[in-house]
Length: 304
Image (cartoon, rainbow, N blue to C red; front, side, top):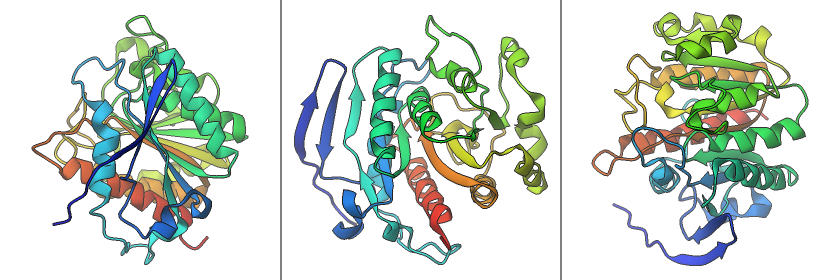
């Protein structure tokens, strides 16, 4: 069993956040592939749990994913590749100590910084509200952007608990700027129905036993696609470690097939994976999240 020594190297602090640079990065890969100059992929960890309304703990998700990633096998059987060879650089862990509105601005600024350096940015949360800032930056950077949401919940409230940037409002804020597609939805508030375009929603109850529906995605996608993955989109049998688990979710092969086909149909430009609420007694969900990121990188760069 590998053991790792976690040493705090630096603390950066301003009025809105702290940043910690740790020796731990995404994956236990050779150092050559983890440097900024050699990396195509940028991992942006955001430890924020400011608007969660049930089970707290998503702020610990980024570190749990980084920890688990050190136990990944480097070779991916399906793509017959070693995705780490595209280079994976891990940014400082960002700990916003601010309102959700300020947090969104900070993540938007940080994401734009890395997009200007031509990185494929993968944001790991943290609660789902961290996605807003990242997607805002992508909307500025890429034209004809479609956002695909994999989630148990619609997240289409206009405001919740006094904030328009609550985790329950994420897709309302995204929909303000670009078209969305929703996959795996199985829990909504009545008020959200009026904001849903039913021609762009793939309900969990309709797709749980088939992959044939994936062909229906193609005409809905623009040239550039961003995927936002709330891990409660997966079934609690394989992903119990979320703040708001819902029965009847996607399985492993469904979610990787969705990502694989989106990458075939369109230019996958970025993504986020959020809402891991780690449980110290069950590390399997942490590893699932890390492997999902690694699979996504493999799909992004296979044969490219």
